[in-house]
Length: 138
Image (cartoon, rainbow, N blue to C red):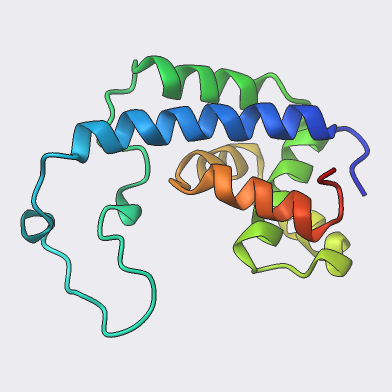
């Protein structure tokens, strides 16, 4: 399944994403939910700040810079594999349909792939779940 991206790289990026998420949540921690202007959903997950991604952090925040650099250091094919792994973790691509995720990534272009990965506030969870679903987690 993974050819250019190895499991350790994926886990490292997941850890960086978790640290960036913690930094973001600390910043947003003192904002009442009412001030975020979101409607409360009747069902499902209720995280009004999830749609913000990592935007509340300044662009030069240490955790987001490290996360961006780690993703940028990957080869083009490894970024496509990471994108596919995230999509599997989100539930948008079945693990046994891996080739569909790679095909989707191939149509997006590098900037869109990187942006899609970096805009996911639950990146850590999605990578971890993707590793589990593809049976790459040990």
